[in-house]
Image (cartoon, rainbow, N blue to C red; front, side):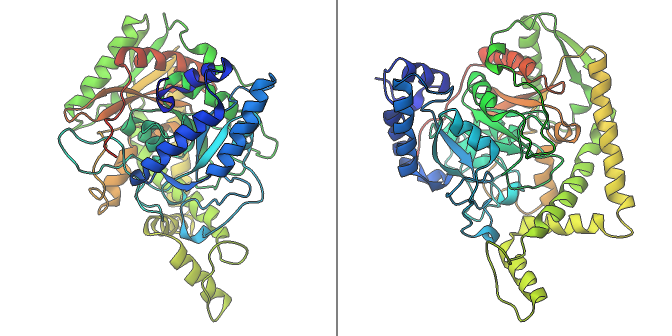
Length: 490
């Protein structure tokens, strides 16, 4: 029998249905892989007992024919999703040993469909970061290394644990969240497939909030098909979330292999940045050529307000973060540092509980929302956001079906290489933030490697609620580029 961890989710689903192996065997294989890969620091909490219990239940359901679409599939859960009776910390000291008494909507739908929980995955603290170096549990290591080098690399962020675990074959798929690129950037850095759905497609209920108008849950999978299977279970209307959209969830998997002939693919001139590495430019051209060879039509487009996206994002996101993080006061749950007065207790708790990056963003956010600055910063950023959204709407109105861009400005960098300058770190999101600002769906697909053998990804941006087109186009790129797995060193 092949190593069970090397199967794709779709292959594992077939094997379970044919009773080639059991969910318990599949789960045990992944638990063993997790134990052997602790050097990656992808998991912050392993739940082997719960995993085996869920696997046995799945096996019983598969045996009596009542297994759901994900019956017996072992998954990892980003530590931003509340999991009932299982510690959930958002990888922040301030949430200490918080154990929720409720389940997030997205994870409850995965369990409803028969999936198995292997444990909780590392992420940047409160999802604030582009390298998974801000977690209170320490940085995650990318399973990829530069050829001939032992330098440890970041997996991207904030969903670094999710991307690293999927790339290292520790789980068959993972939940993730994307506020400004936190699914697509780590997917590009690790040769996995990451999908940021349309805003409102997946419920945000039970997910620790960063920036409520930008956050969206999505899957990271080994292949485009795997991501489409996970997405179907994760999506759906939730009356508990007022931003959740009441639309039927299509069969995303059915879009895989669908013809892309005649589709118009936009190539935005604003994404050709000064000083962009030649290999990113080359990758982009190759991706466009693959889509053209599959029958798509390439058109040059303009998204004129793209240059304002990053500064506007870094006003809107911290403003919403400072508002959302006001609830962490040491009174009801999580960490509490004593003080002589309630004010001092708040100060000590928040000063001790929040890491440097979170404190930086809370201060920026509080500043841009303060009297006298609200109009100059926050209100202006929201107006820019409207213009960014309109740029996309204008392109889609001209018949463009999807937009092709690079996913990241470079391959993965070394742990500690970019920590000194926050602005340099923020520039990692240059190609991804527009999608969140406009509430659109985006997918990152592995498309090649750089000169040092590190994976690079391409991004496809779609019309609102048209993730199916992204899956069809993404699969074309995946077929042309092939799949990459990191050589095992851990």
